[in-house]
Image (tube, rainbow, N blue to C red; front, side):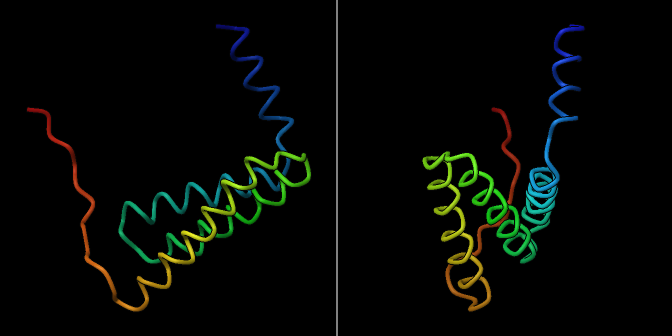
Length: 97
């Protein structure tokens, strides 16, 4: 357990500010998604753009492609939300039977 803790702390200390910012905006985006608020899109887009820059910098082109897909889907969702198109499906809990 001590090895895990020391590894976790060393990785946390070595995390860059852009990555911390992207994680922050990603978490804020998830919170807004839970609350069913339109701010899910701009906060998610900020996170994704930062991750695109990070993955490009480290030549992780496959991961960058996934982030570009997320960016396009976020812009698509934001557009349709503002236009009032589509059906509204509320966030719900799954109940065990």
